[in-house]
Length: 360
Image (cartoon, rainbow, N blue to C red; front, side, top):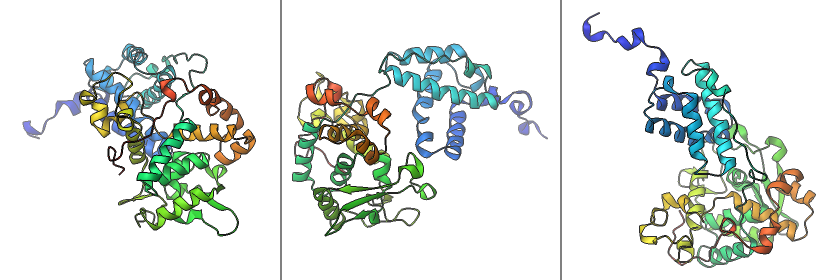
C-alpha cells in the first residue's frame, strides 16, 4: 500500500467521530421508511432536520459530539417557536432518533434515556384550528363559480362532505365512486396497504360512505372534465390525479395553505405585514409561514363539527368519519368556535379574488 492509499480515519477513528449528522439522519429516515407506515416515517423528517440544523449552528458536525445539554437547549428554544404539544412531539421523535444512533454506537446510549418529556397544559394537545361552516360556504361558492369540478374543488368538497382524512381522499380510486340513478351514491374507502394507500386504522377504516347528490354531481363532472386519465405505479386508476399519477399529499397541502392566505382571499393582511415584503405572501412555497393559512385537517374537523350541529349523533359521526367518540369529543367538537367565531386560529376566509390564485 502506497502513501496515497492510506487513510488514517479508517484505521484510528470510531464511527461516532466521522459520521456526520446529515448522514445519520438520512440513514435513520431510510430505516423508518422500511419499518413503519409512510405517514409515520414522514413525521420524523422535520424534527430531525430542525435538530441537526440547531446542532450545526452550535458547532456540532458529527454524531459523537451530541450531548444531553445540546438536546435540552434545543427543546428549550423550540418552546419560544411552537406550541407545547409540538415541543413534546419533537422530544418524542428526537428521542427515537437518539436511541437509533445509540444502538449503532453513533452517540452515547444514555442520552435518549435522560430526555424529559415537556409538560403540556390542559388541552394543550388539542389543535384548535378549524374551518367554520360559514367560511366554508364562501369557499365553495367561489370554487363553484371559478373552479367548478376541478381537482381541488372536488377533493376539498369530498373532505368537507364526508369528513374523511386527507390520506383517505388520496387513497380513492376512480371505481371507488359509485353513482346510481336510484339508491345511494357512495364512496368506497378501502385499505390497500400492499399497493401504496393504507388507511389509518387498516381494515377497520374501510367503509362505504353515502354522498349527497351535489357531491356526486361534482365528482361526475370532475371525472368527465378536469380529471387527468392516469394510472399510478400499481396500475390503479386514482380518483384524484396529477400528470404523474395519484395526487400526493405535499401537492394538496401546498394548494391548501396557499389558497387560505388572507392576502390572496381578501387582498389585505390581518397581521400588519407589508404584503409586498412578506415571503409568505409572495411565494406559494412559503405560504405555510402565514399565521392564518391552514392545512387539510381543519377541513375534516370543521366537517365533523358541522355534522354534530346539523343533528347527527356522535355515534353516527364516529362511524362515518372513522373516529372514536372519545377522540371526537376531545379533538373534533368545535361548536363553541362556530358559535363565537373568535380567534385568528379559527379563521379561514376564502372569498377569493379571481385569478389571484392558480390551482395546480
